[in-house]
Image 1 (cartoon, chains in turn yellow, green):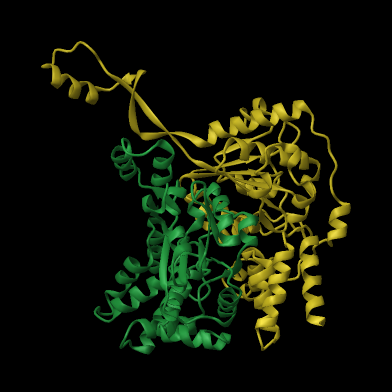
Image 2 (image 1 turned 30 degrees about the vertical axis):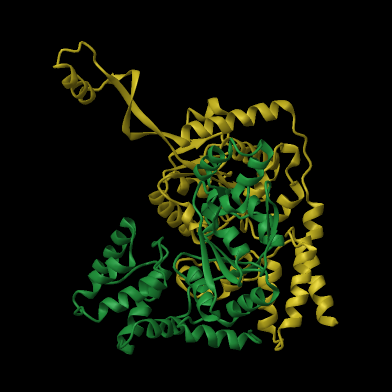
Length: 329
Length: 290
């Protein structure tokens, strides 16, 4: 009986942490407990993993202690992969829920920004050509077509380079320093997901979480802000380098030559700068384009934070939400 | 039928599949609770193989649905045999009235079974493998929900078809995209990662006969170093380890490095990085014991 109560309690804690644990799953866990005879701690842990947790990023966190002594532990002095994170309790996180009002002008502004981002990151001229009246003269096509008409055709055929489309991964910083831009983060994430259906959205602070599912909604007012605020753990400050490392380790398949990465952050990094440099270098080599959007960027706030300085070496485009201003950077 | 986790581990070992106890518990629960098992993990860690081995060891038929972008119900579930229906209409046009023809052409005779329907209508229990579901569109996941939750399928013209024997369903994903909560809720979950060095040695010894244990141990150590190298994106899987160890038996030690590159590294950038590491005498800043 005690075991059963413990399972129900764990399910409740997971729910409070913003995980989707339904009644079905709790029943599965209870039934599973009845099926297994040897109930040592490892077995119970395995049962909970299979029936309740269902998130490999949470499961992977158990391995952090082991990894502390491996490859990554060597490169960095700070013990950023330590298991003990200072995470707010669900009640504290709930109390810290930001409140904001989304106006029509916000919607128009951020919809435009998302479109602009789409234009500059997604469409690029490919290797292949396609016929078009307003293109450049295509001698190869012209000669090939003229051979059909005994080389007497007076027409010069024209063509343009075919436009290829790539995909976008959006990484939004939701740490304490970006608290004032939480509304903008939601607006950007929503419009990017709406304009580019195959894009992937991640939010990061101390931790990195995929939140794409939360933005698969028909209206911005349907975004579950509470769940979003609970999704990412806060505590020991922004660690952009670590977030990029987590992205590469857990979602490495997303980083390839056809995907661009957009980072929405102010660049205040409390993590390991050496790690940030390494991760930016590796990701730059693998993806099509890295675009950084800094909401603080203007004449008074030039990109001079230590994190930004390092990132600028690898960033293809530095943007500000004010599109006209960003053209000057 | 299986009675304990140890029995399952033993059964899988007989089929040369070495499994960690944690993973065996998840598989055991999926079989006992008759729930689909969602298996996630990096490529090449044995997700698909697990379903195949389960089918083989339980002596059940394996039905496989390979997912891809654009996969729809007509390729996954059922399709009407349109040419046959047209011929039938022509034949019956003069003899029978319209309602009779309609009833006749939408009968089971004109139904083409695809993997999901085949699994549900099978006379015996089967193992259904839905491979790489993350490659299919999110809409396809929605379509799978009825099947995974109730083990039934609704065909508008024929009604609802329930499974005679609930199939054992294994769903694999390389986590290239997030799967919906609704799908996850209907499944048990297993995250398979690369095995430990000792387990990998056991697997290789089972798969490749007559290997030199000392050389194989060294090879596995190198492969694990490559996996731990943060600059290498496409990490070699277990299948690659087996390829490399197999190639070692007919190559001399000088050619082993070349074989290592050919069998383990399948990305230009990875090969370039690995060659740089070799050139620098194996001193890689990102690897622990290179």
